[in-house]
Image 1 (tube, protein in one colour):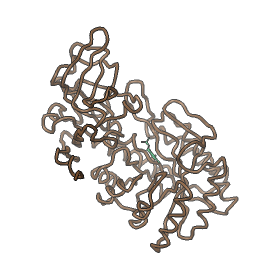
Image 2: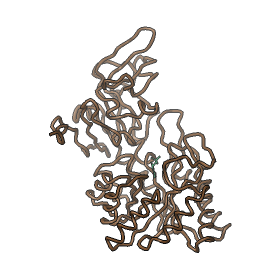
Image 3: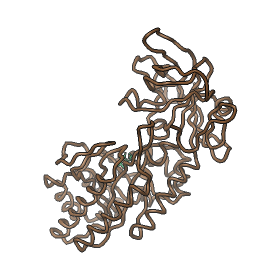
Length: 431
Ligand SMILES: *Cc1c(COP(=O)(O)O)cnc(C)c1O
């Protein structure tokens, strides 16, 4: 399986959006994150146009920037008329430095610090999604002191948890995020928010999981949330104006993954929203979602240089590359699956039972096990697909390995958007 924009050329090399990956590796070095800019922009356009055509005025998608955060991605999101969500002062700082409009930034997190909240209030982010009562009260204090009115949302646990093929409807209250509807916390938070004079409660938010392949859990969450809108109105007289369904649409990592198209996922959600609003005769809220992985995941490909091949007869063959858990920790962290290709050759004898290993001093530093790959030889360029989300953003300097460069490719051209770290960079904060 190749992700969109990838193909093998007549020379046997893997191409991304018309760029020969072997030439990219030569020009920029490896490991290298290669991002397909056309695909990122196309995904954004699909979200923005579907939402503007099918939901209430004022609705827009926010890119969940924890998936990949750097100056250039915020610039692209601004050009594509997306909102963004951020989960830390660092992401907020980066977005502001990229001149992303503050009023289209949503600020999330289950333990925002006092300083982070102050920073968010001072720069005027669009919404702060409040996770707990301590935060609510801190925020009221900060807003009063700054003489500002702050628009907030509340993070709600709707009791639906979804992941890939399964989802459960339970009173899932055992999560560090947000307020549960079931045990009355959520209603209490609404009432306390209404007492905060400098805070305006506009939005209810939920995020039910990640790498989800089914639209039903999103429809169910829509229903549960809207029912809660009705309960809030009954008890307080307030109509909540905005529904935020969070992120979670999956990306394709291997042949067995078949995520829904963006429109397939949102069409039933739009219908559910309309039906439930009709049924309860409630005003249709503005709609927001926060896709991360489904925007940047398949747009990323990581290139490595193969350094050695270690065949353990009758057992497996280790092929070791010049990166590892320092640039992609997802296999080490939760056995995430990936498609691995020899980018240097499309044809040749395939070996089975290979393990793609990193260079970190850690036996768990593997990128993928049990793979088939075309004749891996020292010096070959190895490509790992679908590395656009949660790879660079989770990268580290473990073993003092330098974080790779990132290039954007578009219509056969490439440009660096994140420089490769240097040895001097490693000493930046050492004294
Ligand atoms: C992680 C997260 C997202 C993005 O999830 P994806 O699965 O990458 O789409 C969106 N919103 C919130 C609050 C999140 O925590």
